[in-house]
Amino acid sequence: MEKRTELLFLRAIILILLIFGLLLIGTKVFGETAAADPEPSYTVIDAAELEAMMAEGDCFIVNVSFRCDGYIPGTDWEIPFNLIDHYWDFFPQPGEAKIILYCNGGFMSRVAARRLLAVGYTEVYVLRGGLKQWELEGRPVVGRISR
Image (cartoon, rainbow, N blue to C red; front, side):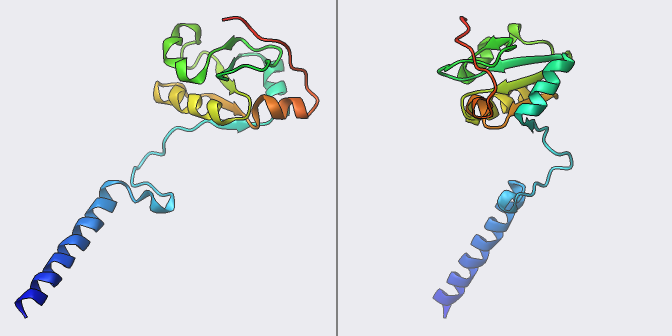
């Protein structure tokens, strides 16, 4: 009987620790967080929205591809997403311009966008489908920018 009591006690402790652990990590199991303020996020735009933003001006467009297969005309800079922390001097200060990121397919630009948000940028945009989608829609792509 004593062994059964010990086993029940151990199970109760494990259950309490599990519940406490879930509360500590914010119960992200179902996509919810315990934080009062939502995390800042970037906005995903399509090619037509990018063209409209380019026409309005007030944006800084960056190709963050690791291996650049070309770029969108009007791109301001080319910086590999994994080296972005070394090039802050080339970016406008937070709030000075909308930062629009793209890469070949979309993954690298999302990684870079999260990094920009982490250091204080608030108007960060990512091109859906990246350069590949841009080109599939018949929009121009030109050669490589030198760093």
